[in-house]
Amino acid sequence: MGSATTSVVEVDNLTRRFGPRRGITDVSFTISSGEVFGFLGPNGAGKSTTIRLLLGLYRPTSGRMRLFGLDPTRDGVRINRRVGYLPGELALYLKMTGAQHLDRYARIRGLTDRTYADHLVQRFGAQLDQPIRTLSKGNRQKIGLVLAFMHRPELLVLDEPTSGLDPLMQDEFARLIRETVDDGRTVLLSSHDLEEVQRLADRLSIIKEGRIVVTDSVDGLRRSAPRTVEFRFDRAVTAADFDHLDGVAVRECTGGRVTLSVTGPVADLLARAGSLGAVDVSARRADLDELFLSFYRDEPATEEAEVPDAH
Ligand SMILES: Nc1ncnc2c1ncn2[C@@H]1O[C@H](COP(=O)(O)OP(=O)(O)OP(=O)(O)O)[C@@H](O)[C@H]1O
Image 1 (cartoon, rainbow, N blue to C red):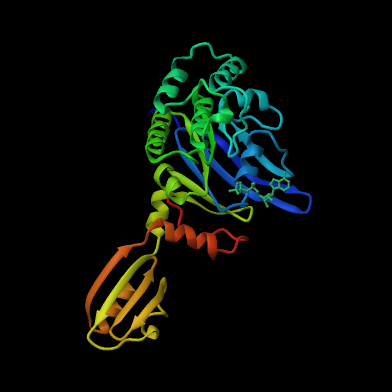
Image 2: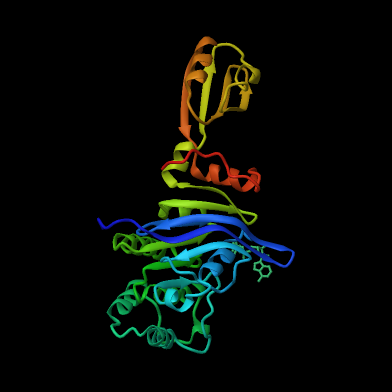
């Protein structure tokens, strides 16, 4: 802590096509050291493709990327030593035990001090003495987590990290993430779980149909999330009384009650409601889930969404 913040991951206009199929198009984002960066998107959006490019497993069609200032297409070996990767689909050897996996990874990485690895095994209650094929999904995932974190890498790239973990283990995982960034290390957390990203990430990008639709801090997104505002009047009002106002969408209007979805400043709306003789008002901030879902559903994938930059 206290040291200067540097970019650990830089991605500029990265494009990867698979023949005629789109993989990702013009993807750009930057991740600073000590940050948890969420990468959120529905199935097939392009999260895994982006990660595979970053790890040098795919070559880009065009664009530029850097990890620690190095180019993954050329410096893969140097980069991989500094990265811990948990793939979305864990490829463990079914006949080998967890202990054999740990030995193998420690050898590849030249890791002699196993204190931290042992600590992680204890912490997650990972079962090391049985062949992987006999383990449940969650227990395999715990081994995947230990393998990703055991050498204290500077960058963790985690694809659906809590898949299969029970709530207690998810909490343990959340604590581990916090400790990791408190240590000045960096996390890229890819997921389609809104709740998980919202809880853990400082900033995030939402990717849809291969393109980034928004990048912002979680707090910034929360500020720009629509509020639900409800007014009551002692006479009937109509949707037309409100729907011309900037940032206001009428969700429901019956008799003397109107429910609105509101983004941005409320002065004009309050003036309007006042002039119509409002007798009561209530407001609640929409869940971020609503905002995320609106990006998933409605946003055109070809344009950046107009969310005010929080930085
Ligand atoms: N090796 C490949 N060959 C052909 N098409 C591919 C390949 N890998 C990915 N794609 C295509 O690229 C697009 C993005 O897929 P990707 O796996 O990156 O999505 P994702 O966001 O990780 O999805 P999920 O959440 O389901 O894992 C999809 O249309 C997919 O079909």
